[in-house]
Image 1 (cartoon, rainbow, N blue to C red):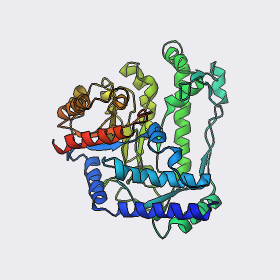
Image 2: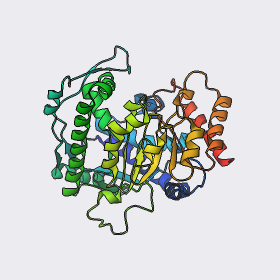
Image 3: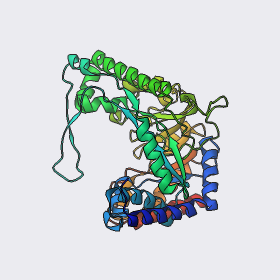
Image 4: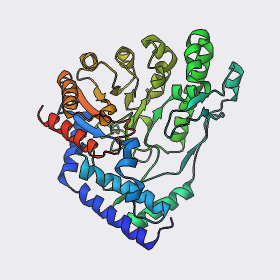
Amino acid sequence: MNLTATDRTLVRDLAKQVAEVAALAIQAERRELWKRHNRLERIRPMILVFPEGSWAELLPDAVLQCETDAGRGLERALRTRLYYHDHLSDDTVIEDEWVVHKAVHVTGWGLQAKHIPSTLPRGAWAFDPVIDKPADLKQLTFPEVSHDEAATQRNLETAQELFGDILTVKLKGVCHVSFHPMALYTRLRGLEQVMVDMVAEPTWLHEAMAFLEAGYRRQVQQYVDQNLLDLNNDSTYHSSGGNGYSTELPKSDCDPDRIRPADMWASAEAQELAQVSPDMHYEFSLQYESRLLEPFGLNGYGCCEDLTRKLDHVFTIPNIRRISIAPHADVAVCAEKLRGNYVFSWKPQPSHLVGDFNEDLLRRYLGHAMEVTKGCVFEMILKDTHTCQHRPERFTRWTEIARELVEGC
């Protein structure tokens, strides 16, 4: 990594600030709360904020001081952690770690998705199907996994030399496992075409999903065979928002030198099927995802799809723990069904960050959700935040209001 002396000094100074924040007592307190929460203790609603697309407005390029691209990447990663401490009072745990991920490469599925780009900046693209007929499925191939051990070692040594005396440098393999067969297939076939196939060509669609299930299963087996899996019972991002802090993983018979799916969290989702019936959702996606999730110790399901009417099917997923309740879901109905048996992972409307930022409306909106979920293990995950209209203080106020409500419940 080519850093100038100025860049090196700057990122090391930022790393020292991160280490100071990570040493605060609040981090240990939050870590313990997450462990209790994830094992289904009803403590208090937990709060996580993911600015995602809005980071460009919270930490614009103009604030970065490093001269090199490599330095600016490191600087942004460190400043992001410090921004949480300075401006966001959610339950994010700032760890004193610098994680180096193994150089694991996964080939594609034999076909490359095509899109019709938007004419607008950050606009929505359109599908350009590459699978037009059943014979095209024969072009699909299973992914192949490989590990560049030399690159891994170089990256680890670089991080140790740069941060090893400041942060805990950790080497981790594959620690985020998430399955998206319907998303993968709709990118190749087209969303409208898949909707039609459910009625007109169900056998063809089942053939495609069976192939993707087999491919994903084979990919996980390659991770196991090459000993590339790693624990994610820590701050690792889980499902469509959440983290993996857990006292239930790994399993008691875990070999720390050879992690198994049974020692890990995994997740799946099928946002593309938001408008189909519960039975069709199960038939064409969830049954395949459920079998993929079965080997894992704890699982999450869902993202932005409304699962209100589909929860009975979701409950059949082996080891299901975290369930995503989308902004358009009926929170009261979902609360009655989930009770305290699962983590109620609520995704509040990110649209409150744009337009007229009405604090009274936001307070009533969040308060209602907290009221109807009093019997649940409840978390509020603010995400899909594509913009705050260059008003970063709105994230701060959103989090402060959520915190006030949480502390008053």
